[in-house]
Amino acid sequence: MSAEFQPPEGGWGWIVCLASTWTNGTVFGILNCFGVLLIQILTELEGANLTTAALIGSVSIGLTFCLSPLASTLTDIFGCRKTALVGGLLASIGVFASSFATKIGHMYVTYGVIMGTGFSLAYTPSLVILSHYFKKKMGLVNGLVTTGSAIFTIVLPMMMRMIQDRYGLQRTLQFLGVLIFILIPCACVYTPLIGDEITRQSLDSKRMKRRKKIDCGVWRIRDFVIWAISTPISLFGYFVPFVHLVNHTNIILPDANAEVLIALMGATSGLGRLIFGPVSDLPSVNPLRLQQVSFLVIGVISTLLPVCTKFYMLAAGVCVMGVFDGCFVSMMGPVAYNVVGKDRMGQALGYVLGLMSIPMMVGPPIAGIIFSHTGSYEFAFYYAGAPPIIGACILFLVRPSRDVIPGRLDDEDPLDKCRDYDKKMKLDGTIDSSDSSISIGKHAYGNESFASEKIREDSTLLLVTDKVSVV
Image: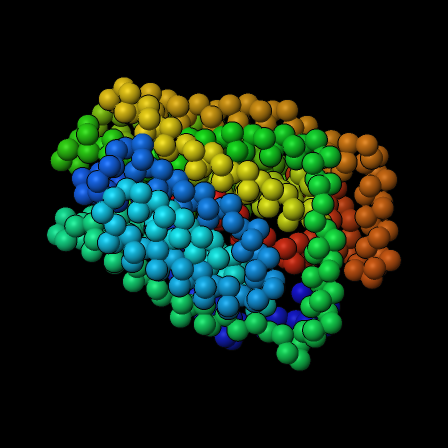
């Protein structure tokens, strides 16, 4: 925000927070529960097989990620309310149209492309608007908003299964369409605080600065390149359990309530975020290593799913996977800050989120192809578990955090970089060397830190990383 503007830290902002929470829950709750729809799609739609049906969910989640830069640009140009309104309307039209689909090709367009595009346009403004109302309480608001996806992922699977059993796929999709339609009134409460508080001149200046910051400088940072390679590799199997676990459970345990497993994964993912968020603040903890452990555990559990022949074994496995999924998601922002620094964090997250859309879109159909050729999910889950383990190994190439300064380019001297940043901030009047509360010192993870109070200005960027969580 501009220097002359101070967010109200409440008031109408709590209504905005509630609307953003509903948006978060609706978008990622529905994306997470596609595995519940998968079984009904296979039985009711012409030309559907496991591979083609899984691709529908992959397209929707892939576009939600892939179109994030476009959604951000449209939000800058047209504002949060208009962009979110279009997104909610587009997504609801897509799902309602899906309820009348008779062929698998129809669902690619309606559920995959139209809904996925609408979700991306609706979700991004719901994060941006929060920075208009909160700064000091952004941590609390972050926690409230991100619980939306966990709550919806717990509740939606059972509700969807109940509606499917009684009324079929069409009524289930229409029920989801009603939930998505509520995104439209949610968008209406996104009242931007511009007017007297933020002048048009300062807003234009902010946009010009943002345009100037769009460069490829982060790709000269060695540790970012390693992280940007390892994360997409790790996610080739990430979305596979969400799409195929229900069908796998119905095959090996026909009498089990398979939807409970998705609900458990969502609940434990929320728990993981609550646990590992504070843990990452401890002086001796490096968030990148936490993310590395998360990849390793998720990979190992995925490879063990075929040998879990009892329901309680599957439940225990998905609970462990959910906890470390929450850890992975909650570490995205801290890792980006730790690797590239505050000024480049937005660019870094944007690049990584864009790269992540590719493996998350490709992974489930590949697992479906493996199942179609083998008649079993055994090798499909082995495939899902291998990439996270490989990604965890790649992260060993990142230098120990005590030797790394955030945002340091490989051809720069570390101390000169830190001094230059400090000097620039003082010249800009951003920090006062006499103010000990924001003095430059050792970061908790061993790196030279930037002004801690300035981190809150980028809290919205940390919220964006919840898009990763398909939980």
